[in-house]
Length: 528
View 1 (cartoon, one colour):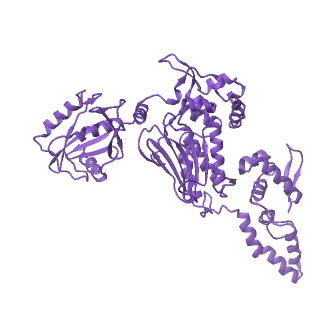
View 2 (spheres, one colour; view 1 turned 30 degrees about the horizontal axis):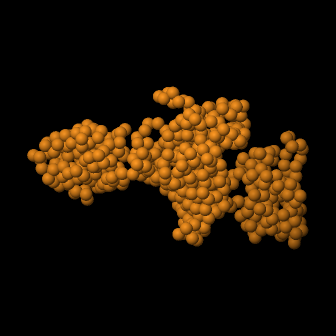
């Protein structure tokens, strides 16, 4: 290790992957405990001859070779260190002092020192005695995903097959051309296509796997294979010691997603936001990403209870996790790693999730608009997403920095208070009739394009606004494309089809909107 790298490590101090040991009179037992914990976690580096605060005191130069020999002897002794491991310490000379450096790689085994298992938590070595925690360590070391575990005695009757017609429709609607392979498949064929019916080449077992049961299983079957599976949804805004509202969700992942999403809609404000000309629900976007993540990527064999909590100044989700590293996730260090790829792929097929890694980016993007602050992602044995909340905050600008409140509204208000030049000329001309009067009257009869856009958002007979935000948004889009269909209006604005079908006749009754021609070949006309 070079001097600059070592100096940087000293300045940062001890972390989950760095440990300092004094070792003034030889190597103590706690050094081997650190070796054990680093092997069981993410690996790391041990520096002997350094105090906890990063001060280099060194080890006796003459004693260093014997210390290394004793170190190798202990970690190679199966009675002390199990399973044994080979590590190669090296010497670092730093400012006239000798430091023993040991690089500890992450291991595929769970190790113990003197028959005690140690795990690394932050910068501490912790004894692990609980059987559940030890089991989680073994799971963490596995190269296979627990969602692939096969239950050979599970049958199709253990699944909610009544959900499959809905799933086929969702998959079809989530494809650009309205076609999806699942549409024409039978139930068993669909399950195999989705990876929910597996074959273990090592044991020869065939059957439904854990992913199938968690996605589509009946409640009693889920309870049988994952007794601790639950998502506890809480609101703690007034009664912070207990809760204001609560929903305990124990059903399959498909229905759990819908229940938790509705819980978020019920207790969070939906702030109006335009992205280009498309209205976007910040609340729904953020909650969707949080719920999708906690359902897709949790470790279902853990006894840790997953939570979705809404507080006054924040909301968060947390769930058991099979971590590959520890620390905070940012947009810069994001390395997408699917914890349950079968379940994640199923969610993407039916539109409950997007491509891997997009959830983190979306939350960083839209949380700023929703609350003015960044979210937090913390990776560890428990995975947490924390989104700040501020009901009073309002982001008044779109992605380009322009006011997201309709430009037409501002122009209308300005035009109402300060008539444009053509209008002023018309008023002057009416007092002093002459050739200019005729031109002014002509201009009044044939308003310019800007005047037309302004009048779209006014009553035909008044200068006051009489349109909702949804009505104004629809008229703005129709003004740009007068042959647009209702489905295209839904896609561009995000307004539901039901709302669009209710608004358009209302605008026609007001005389603002008129349909010319047939349903397929006709066009819209905005009447001023």
